[in-house]
Image (tube, rainbow, N blue to C red; front, top):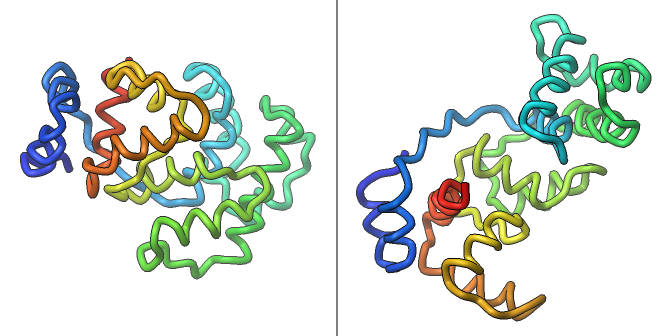
Length: 197
């Protein structure tokens, strides 16, 4: 929930204050389970919103209750997954996610730090740091995630803060700019995405 306290904290940064003032209120995040969120992230990667929704819908139609239970997904033939529009690579990746969750059913995400979750989930082939950061932000509703590898976040910050650096120096500067937003960097990033459009 975006509270007045969080907004007041973020508005201590004058540029973020302007972003917040010119951006409609952020919608609430409903949160959810890590496993289906990861599967959806993979099925939707590098697709338009419309194409992603279509393919993910077809994917879910493969399962009773429209839920890709790990034990069923891990056993599905790759060609069946391909028939709903997944590439060979994405088919392999969603099966990797299913296998991981079959082997790690008792994982208690609430007891782990953001860093520990990133470390665990990026061991799954096909799941990168950015994907896990999105899980942290939107499935687990963690408040202080800064996905510096997100192109939209970088572009918004470069434009708003007039950053004229590249590579390592750019990343260091963006981290420096975002540091005061803590412990609410997730909310700050959501404002940046909405501002960027």
